[in-house]
Image 1: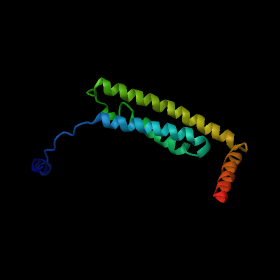
Image 2: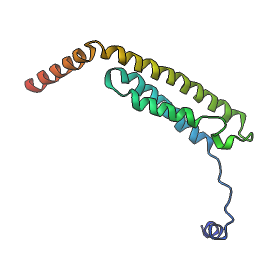
Image 3: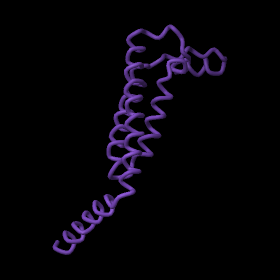
Image 4: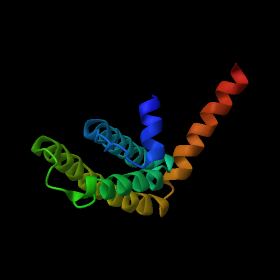
Length: 129
């Protein structure tokens, strides 16, 4: 511990170790959460947060910005990064499709019937219990 403190105050900081696996796992979990939010967004209005998460993952998996875009990144890490980027591309397409479906459903009485029926069911359960 004292070696690290001495290094901190002397200005000779050690090179940080790159933990690509943990970062890629977080990005992978985030893109799956974004996909779930996009799908649930059609009836539950969570498409906008899903789209924001999807865009964040898409920007975070840019090959030029990931770890400075150096060529020292192992090929296995690059392959995982490309896979997550492809998944984010599909999720972006899903975002657009979900938002278009919401626009169409807003022009009908779908949401009134869906949430009206759910509210009537909850009211009936509340009064009977």
